[in-house]
Figure 1 (tube, rainbow, N blue to C red):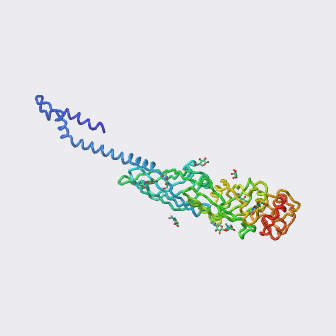
Figure 2 (figure 1 turned 180 degrees about the vertical axis):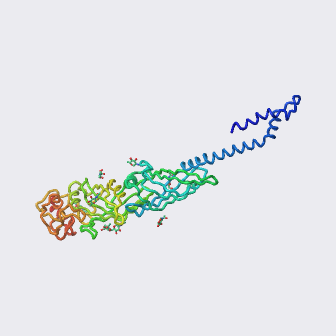
Figure 3 (figure 1 turned 90 degrees about the vertical axis):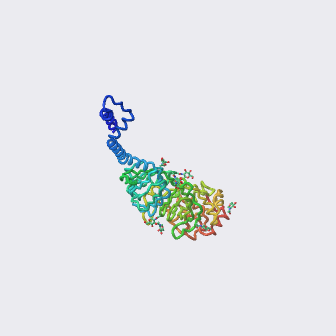
Length: 426
Ligand SMILES: *[C@@H]1O[C@H](CO)[C@@H](O)[C@H](O)[C@H]1NC(C)=O
Ligand SMILES: *[C@@H]1O[C@H](CO)[C@@H](O)[C@H](O)[C@H]1NC(C)=O
Ligand SMILES: *[C@@H]1O[C@H](CO)[C@@H](O)[C@H](O)[C@H]1NC(C)=O
Ligand SMILES: *[C@@H]1O[C@H](CO)[C@@H](O)[C@H](O)[C@H]1NC(C)=O
Ligand SMILES: *[C@@H]1O[C@H](CO)[C@@H](O)[C@H](O)[C@H]1NC(C)=O
Ligand SMILES: *[C@@H]1O[C@H](CO)[C@@H](O)[C@H](O)[C@H]1NC(C)=O
Ligand SMILES: *[C@@H]1O[C@H](CO)[C@@H](O)[C@H](O)[C@H]1NC(C)=O
Ligand SMILES: *[C@@H]1O[C@H](CO)[C@@H](O)[C@H](O)[C@H]1NC(C)=O
Ligand SMILES: *[C@@H]1O[C@H](CO)[C@@H](O)[C@H](O)[C@H]1NC(C)=O
């Protein structure tokens, strides 16, 4: 096109001369005159060239420039997930209710068609999505809100487990959303763009700060088999709401299991969560600990996930994540025992030993949940069991009235422990 314009002007200088000059004696036309004459004669050529160039530029803009501008606009936009609720979990799917903001600094405000987006961990790559969501049609603006509320099928369990492990244990985690869709902008032809956004979110950070806020010990298990009732405090620094169903946790001290704890119908909301908890403790093991190593009655408990069950179905992705996460908390068993009239300092104080050794079988028979101990027996029997002997010896003789999960049943016997520490044999 650049050669098109000069050409006529070269031709013109030659052909022009006879027309304007009229002969060798005529005055030579000034440069200005020549230009004017040229345009008078060849205006049509200039118009054609102008239009052709304009058309070419327009076509380039539309078919090369615009798709690039459109793609850049989409690529430069940011995705910020402001809330995400995961509910109705099944072993194969979860419902996701997600609100996000796509912010763009572009002066174009195109519309994107609804599209299918793959969700994956950036490290795993787009070949390994754990699920897909349908992103609704969106009109780009400075900030446009995108709301998704649908069931997501889990297409790759291993990846979904990895994802949930990161969500649970990391302070922050990243997830990528990727799809391809049609973009409409005014009268420009429809163009296709890749939508690929990696967004960084706050995770649950290992549930750091988890603690058993209050708990009571029941000497006799309740109808559900629990002998610990209380509440747990779970901070959730993320924007996620997660429905996990009935979550059972393993409790251990120095790798010795001391029981399990179940939190029913867990729905972790952003912020602080206080949820009721029921536990089944191996009271023999607990007694053993507080009379040997932890005489202050405060047990440093390691908590790991055991199961996550929703409507009777195990949720492997939450279970794997919970099982890989260790939480630590302190259980003030001494305080809980004091509430039911058992003074731990009298339990642990009598180190002197005594001949008044009348072991009770109660200690040996731990609560319903732990089956490792000897079978429960309602009558006092000689403690021939090896592991249980130290804790069983703690108990006063008059506990034979009932089958006891490790502790004396009646307040009477509890009082007696307090009154006569000499009866305690360590
Ligand atoms: C995302 O949105 C939240 C809440 O609106 C805001 O606090 C946060 O700063 C935003 N993050 C980014 C990266 O824009
Ligand atoms: C868009 O959102 C950002 C934070 O996400 C906020 O700072 C900004 O003011 C918002 N802009 C508009 C026009 O709403
Ligand atoms: C999401 O969809 C479910 C049913 O599909 C509906 O019950 C629920 O209210 C919806 N949530 C929101 C926030 O729209
Ligand atoms: C999550 O935490 C692990 C271990 O701390 C770390 O290697 C990984 O990079 C973190 N992932 C993200 C996305 O921050
Ligand atoms: C624990 O016991 C106290 C007093 O005995 C009672 O007020 C409280 O409700 C109990 N808590 C639980 C979780 O059972
Ligand atoms: C168990 O808890 C103790 C005390 O809180 C802590 O020192 C220890 O590291 C924990 N063990 C694990 C495996 O996290
Ligand atoms: C869950 O708890 C049960 C009963 O205490 C136990 O047999 C099982 O091994 C535990 N599973 C895990 C993964 O901790
Ligand atoms: C949790 O367990 C209780 C008692 O077994 C049951 O009634 C409830 O439906 C369970 N919750 C869920 C979400 O499965
Ligand atoms: C427990 O017993 C110790 C000594 O045996 C005593 O000093 C303390 O006051 C008792 N505590 C309670 C709450 O009775």
